[in-house]
Image (cartoon, rainbow, N blue to C red):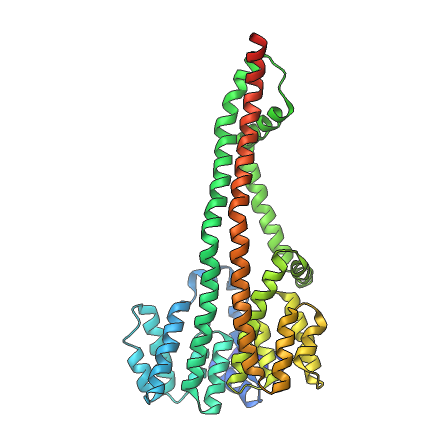
Length: 405
């Protein structure tokens, strides 16, 4: 027997935590389901503590996001064509190019052949399939439409992947430009500027203030770069440690949403992710309160997650979802208005998916506009800084030349 900790969603939409002293992960999942709850996370107690530092070195092999998407699309196609689940998994066993992915599919097939439902087989692969994924599959099994559920899930994963990749691709050039700017400044200050210091000392001239500033920055970087590096590492560690505190993280995330440029972008990205998750769950027959409890976990901003918790409490008492979300004033107004229309028309699931599509496009357009402005701004900053450094070097030389003439 071993101790297993778990998180689960009740039929009322509450997230509960607890622990079981059972023989296996599967037995813990069964006990949670017998209680009428949906398991979100089940982990062995000893694996959640001391070994976390080296978990990345010894973690079980996993499929990447692209492989999970391909697996979902292929399985949905095979089931839609009338193939039995175990036969479909056997066919999929020959498709992955990665040996790690093949072993995962093989374990899933063996679970299913042993009589376990697909959701339980997927849940037995921690770190591969998300809680959202497993719960959607479980809802599809209950509703008897697993192929349709998998097709919708594949569409959800594909859209989420497309949005994430579009943002990453758009950031590549600005990231390279920023690195090159700092690299050029580092070379100028550390290797070029200090070369002029002996010459200026020999000339015995009074240096302008900007020259003194540039020479001080250059010699400081040259002599104490290691101290600055240690300071930067410590600052990153300190910030990460502070943000690990839930109260501090909540304050920071709330402030982030109010920032002029970044706040609206974060709100649009999080709203798109939340709406697509919630709409997909409702489309697959998951009750609203349960769907709210599950979709809350996809939010990366803790302030928005807190607002979702409050909205869930209001929905439990009979309030509307749109009104509950609008109370926090953290979600975009357009989103809450569209959700209100969906509630009034009785098509909340479809409207949530439209909200997701709308804010996917809004987020992409916002990123494109920000990056379109970032490139010339970085170019101007680099030009200005380089010009400042060159002026600091040339002013004493010009002063000496004038005095000689």
